[in-house]
Image 1 (cartoon, helix red, strand yellow):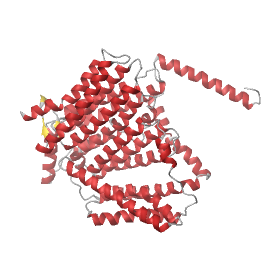
Image 2: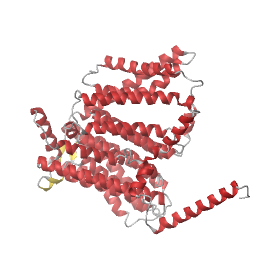
Image 3: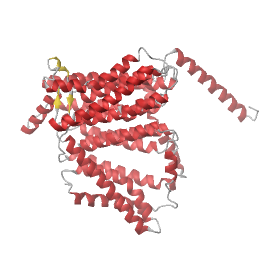
Image 4: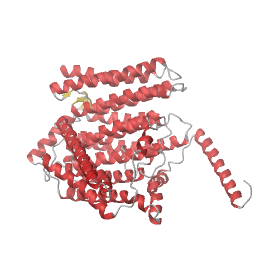
Length: 555
């Protein structure tokens, strides 16, 4: 009875957003007063529900509603620490984005329709994170893709938006198919769609040392689903092309919907831990995407395109951390990235970041390579020393140590600058203190997140040989990239480096290859054909002018 009452409380949040979406059908035009009011009321209700449910979970532990369905497959809600963390994050982001949208689209002739589509998307994401059964998990996963697609094509007269939406639609359907296969395989193996029953069965079999045939395939399809959802290389191209959508859509996409991939992996952590190959795939693809996105990000001149590559890199890092088995750290990174990216997009037109960036001074003279190596070694050395004092077991918690080391590698530039400065000793002390501060923050926040999620994710285990090799390779590659990045300002005039920079700026042309593969550039609609023809005519005129100018004739 208590759990059913809980269901009525939790369901109020997505229900309020659904009502907002339905109301937009009747007020889809300019300045829809009722839709705007209901949108803001929905966000307040969502925050209140998240706080109430958080208190209930702290008081009573995990709670789950009764199943509404057939043969243990259907609709049920699961309220635990993981879902509450996600629910709270979505509620806060929803409040900010909806409020921003009301001002941002004020005067737009379809403002009501936009707010309605935004509300439908938020409702779908909330159902996803609250899912307690494979049935509702699959349905809500598909709904998030469909509702996002309706936002991406909000301005149907923009060919760029249509091309990106089409590519996203194709990848989303492939992701849905992968998740459907994983759901069918799990249901056939365990005879139920209840997530708690599945996780309990996996833990019991592992405790008894019994094999779990078929879970390897399930885990691989779950990994493929997450990779497709979170714009991982080489399927990331659509994300950098959706900038023609309204800014609130970009904020919701980068701060919320992209996180569905890491969330799915964290929710299905017990399935991943029963697999040998799926975590390795996550580590390789996620790690490469994190490096790829970070490097390409540094070469972009457009703020929003740079932010898109930043999101690609962050999602890759989160999935790589999941592959390492440090799920609390992945969740911590997911939440932090969401708020950071929402702020970045909603304030992308501000000059504040430019002013802050102007205060950062570059190195004035060329740095010798051996000093860069010493700087990297000092950063990692200070980190490892502090970690040992903290009490980290390097054998059992090697994955956790590796993640922290990657984060601390970012401080190598500070150590290098200190070594190359005339006042090297004071700067070295400051750099050391900063490294200790970052390390303390990392381990403290990770420990807090681990405490909250301890019942929802597996304990960190001793990595096998495959993971150790992958971890070592990742650390070496990340250190090499940091080394090159520090030297980059002083080798930028090198012809080979300049040529490589051009290829990197274009994302190694992975998006162009993907376009040709799926023929995504052919969008058949009257509006698109008209705009495309105009663009073709403009290009012809430009070519003619350039040719005339080249011949020395007046253009």
